[in-house]
Image (cartoon, rainbow, N blue to C red; front, side, top):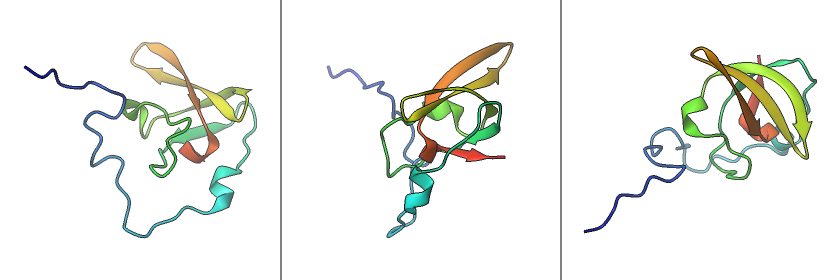
Length: 94
């Protein structure tokens, strides 16, 4: 028997689709954010590096730090606060 894969992109076929021929602009990859700024998580399917897990899509949070080229975002999920590390192309400002 073959075991089903439970990787990071499981059940994300519809979530991570784009229109054919779509290319994001270079400025989307070069955005900068301030610490304390409110942002929303919006994954960019053309770039897999630094993509947060798909269950965090659409959530908002505050930027609490920077790690390399990525940002650390504090997101409230239920009663707990999660820290998510994502690159700027997967984040949009509110």
